[in-house]
Structures are given as C-alpha cells and as structure tokens.
Length: 399
Ligand SMILES: Cc1cc2nc3c(=O)[nH]c(=O)nc-3n(C[C@H](O)[C@H](O)[C@H](O)COP(=O)(O)OP(=O)(O)OC[C@H]3O[C@@H](n4cnc5c(N)ncnc54)[C@H](O)[C@@H]3O)c2cc1C
Image 1 (cartoon, rainbow, N blue to C red):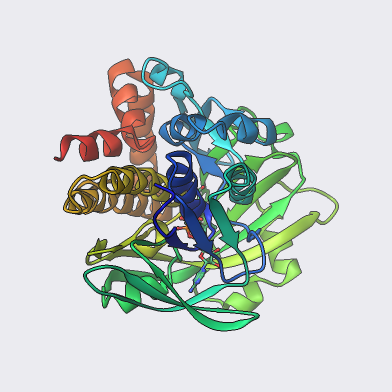
Image 2: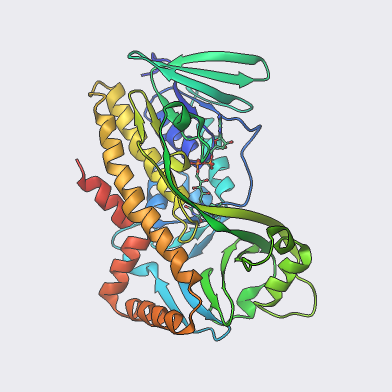
C-alpha cells in the first residue's frame, strides 16, 4: 500500500499520532502535519481508561506508559473534609480487559511514545512547523495547502484525517458546524508536590470532591505531582483567581499547612460540550477534539479520540485494500452516537453532579454512589459505562 501517496493527517496530538501509528503498522504511508514545532506539553489529559490501554498495547505503547505513570486500581467521589466517600474498584473488570485500572500518565508522554514508535516505520513522516491552511477535495483526491518555513505548498493525497483539535481547520473547510455550548465558568488546574495522600485518609489517586460550604475540587495524581482542579467562585474575575495568593488559598482550603504550597504549573481552561454535525465526507474525516469536545470530568476526551483514531484507521486500511469507500460512513455511524450518548452525556452529568451545592442533594448523590459501589452487579455496570467499555460495545453493535 506504500505505492499510494501518503495519507495526510493534520495534527500530531495523541489522536493524529495514534491514527498514524495504526495506519503505518498496517503498511500505509502517512504524513502527519503539525503546526507546532514539537509535541505540545501543556497540562491536559492524565487519565487512561482500560480499553484505551488494551488498544495501545497492540502497538507496544501501553508498557511505555505504565513505566511512566501510576496504575490506579480505584477512584472515588468524596465529601471534604469529612472524608466520607464512594470508592469504585476497577478490579471487577478483570475478565473484560487486560488493564483493570485507570492509568494516570500525562498526555504528552503518550504523544512522545507514539512519535518514537512511528520512527520505526520508514513510510511514516511527522513534519513539525507545518500548518494546514486550507483543504479542498474532488472525486479523486484531496488538496492540502500547507505553510512551513519554506513557504506554502499544496500536497495531494487520496485521504486526509483532520485530528487538528478543537479549532480544526479541516472541520471548517468542510463547512461542518460544531454544535453545542461553552460553559461560563473557568476551571483552574494547578500542580503541586504536596503529599495530599498523607493528609487525607483513604484518598484514591483519582478523587472528585465536594467541599463543605463551598464548591468542588478534584485531585488527580501523576508521578511526583498532584493535579488539583479548582473551580473558582464565579462572582470573581479569572485574573484574581489566577493570582498566586488565590491559588494558595484554594489549596490551603483543602489541607491547611503553615507554608505556602509549592505550585509548579497553573492552567485555566473553559469547558465546552460540542459535537461536529458530521464526522466527514468523501475523502476527509475528522477524529478526536476536531469532532467532539466535552468536560474533562471523567477523563474521556482523549480516550474517545483514540478510540475514533483506531476505528477510522482500521476502516481506511480496508478501503485501501479494496473495500468500498462507503465503509467510512460506518465510522461516523459507529463513533458519533457514542460521542453524543456516552462521552458528552456522561461528562456533562459528572460536571453537573460535582457542581451541586445543596448539602442534601450532595448527600443523596453520595449515598446513591455508595450503594452502587457496594453492589457487585451495579458496580460492574457502572464501571463498564464510566470506563468507556459500553461506548465501544455500542459502536461495535452498529453495522
Ligand atoms: C485540563 C484538561 C484535562 C483533560 N483530561 C483528560 C483526561 O484525563 N482524559 C481524557 O481522555 N481527556 C482529557 N482531556 C481532553 C484531552 O486533552 C483532549 O481530548 C485531547 O488532547 C484531544 O486530542 P487531539 O489529538 O484530538 O487534539 P489536540 O491534543 O488538541 O491535538 C491537535 C494537534 O493539532 C495541531 N494543529 C491544530 N491546527 C493545526 C493545523 N491547522 N495544522 C497542523 N496542525 C494543527 C495542534 O498543534 C495539536 O498538536 C483533558 C483536557 C483538558 C483541557
């Protein structure tokens, strides 16, 4: 299949690189175009779900991530400061996955591992500082206008995957709308090496907390750091909430300590819930954040994007081997409903549950979660859904 011009992929994020690896491994030549000058290392995803680890394992990536991450057999929803919680133990999924846990590992480590693995394939090229500016397609192929240090050139290919993130040029070029909403609040993600686990008894490495008399926060551990999501009071300004003293006050409200917290990185971000009106057409298809955006609550955006990437790449390989291009419509039929019914819906529900302020409603929600966690069948069902296994089953059932 190397005889064809390379499949173009816009974006060397985790989704574009995962698609590139799946294609390259099947013998398909790929050319990834990335606007940035290297792998982006900002504070983004840290949670990997079991089926994603199973998929990446097929390419030897999972052991690389495990070596750089934290295996987390359980996660929890918790009242703070009482510590009362519902704990979800993923070992009940051990008959369904080779990885019955969440892995906490920074997203950029995945991108780096994918990039390193791609270097093993002479027919895979990743070009940094190469921005896709415009896309057109006709019956026989795709024209991609690319700007790099050498100037602007047009590449011709039979296929293009738009994995170019939330502001996707590819999606806009196809005239596809990105329907949904952007929420008003700004969330702040701060990292610290403070050992919360030594102060909060029974803490899981992934913990979502309601704070007594206040809003909520979450604590997600990665090697050597806790990532704390802070939800500032919406009556104040974001600028004020980002001031070092405000970040320290938010952390002191979790665990009071005599010294200021050591804070390494701070990232404010807005939460969106959007889905592309179509996942592509003809020779151009979207995957990952280019196709769907959701609240990070529950850690599903990148995972869902990787599931898109493997689904789309698998179908593209079959088309390149002679099956009808109509097969690509099945990609949209399988993956778009999952993004809507599972990823966006669950992420939205997680966000709404943790934003609840009424003490009685919080307690009722906690009791319900505890009852689920204590009943083996209910627990299994809950974890099959929240670990994204149900979404994959849903997509496989659609033909
Ligand atoms: C704070 C936070 C926490 C999160 N936590 C989780 C989590 O725990 N688990 C989870 O599953 N998800 C999580 N997410 C979501 C996750 O980060 C995204 O879903 C993921 O980055 C999507 O990957 P992508 O490759 O589709 O897009 P991106 O990571 O955005 O990559 C797109 C790439 O395309 C490049 N690009 C853009 N335009 C062009 C162009 N015109 N030409 C060439 N290149 C271009 C960009 O430079 C970028 O490298 C989180 C998000 C945030 C903000």
